Amino acid sequence: MTTTYTYYKNSNTGEILMKQHFSDTSIKFPDYFYDWNKKSIDTPDLTGFVEISEKTFNREAKLKARSLNCV
Image 1 (cartoon, rainbow, N blue to C red):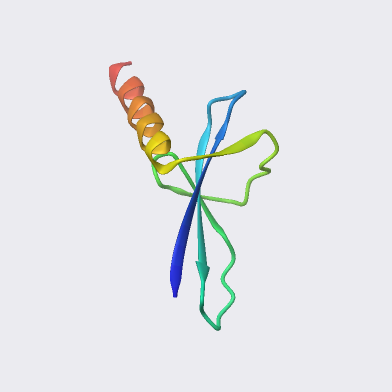
Image 2: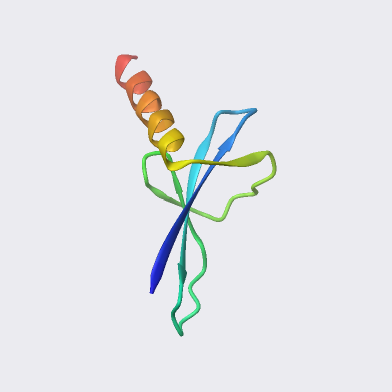
């Protein structure tokens, strides 16, 4: 069983998401989605989202965490 992570960012709202997909298994799992602080969310509408790299996702998540701590 392999796990593949795909990262998305909405350029209009700045929202970032992570998708977890399991493959190479006899059991069919749905895709799981998480928000920037890795909390599970329902399957979102991915209209307006573009795929980004893991490095960009981590950088954006760090900036969001800092901005919330400074307020």
